[in-house]
Figure 1 (cartoon, rainbow, N blue to C red):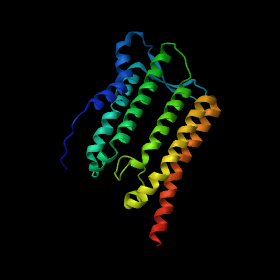
Figure 2 (figure 1 turned 90 degrees about the vertical axis):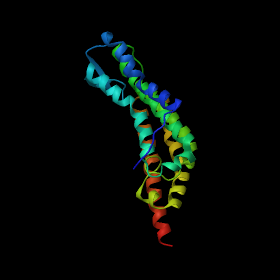
Figure 3 (figure 1 turned 180 degrees about the vertical axis):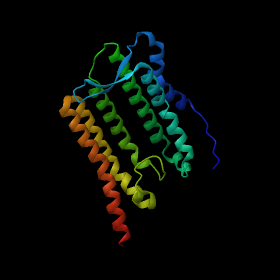
Figure 4 (figure 1 turned 180 degrees about the horizontal axis):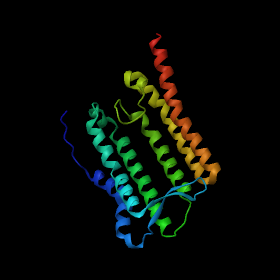
Length: 218
């Protein structure tokens, strides 16, 4: 399969945003401790650590995610459909870049003894991103890398359309739970967010299955 990738200002911007923690880590290399907190518990305390060099490598790999998302678009057999929902695609890619950057900078700042509520910030950011994306989900046309991709949506355009129309409000529900979680905080907030997120993921999948079965019975 032949395809040509062209890069835009958005590609450069999202990549720089996602790579900014890795760049910052290299610039502050001598100030960083030998071990860096890489994961935080429900109570916003670190429960997993990595060596400094390993953490920087991880930040570089994470920073390349926006580029991988871009490449996935060009490798998609239905890549022509992306023109029909380009705004939803770019908003998603930018949102992911910002969340990754905030998480990476959170690791670095914590290692420099600047403490804050990591889970609260991440839940709030993801919640806000999902609220925005829920408004765009109905625009997404059939493809293999973006949207609600189940065996039933991919096999039937009608199931795809109706599932994404249903999935938009569900995604916004997940986003709202993230904002509530950021406000509540702690273990209770995390439970609220994970519950809302699970519902927003599982409900459209189940809906697509039931709709596909209903249409095939006609």
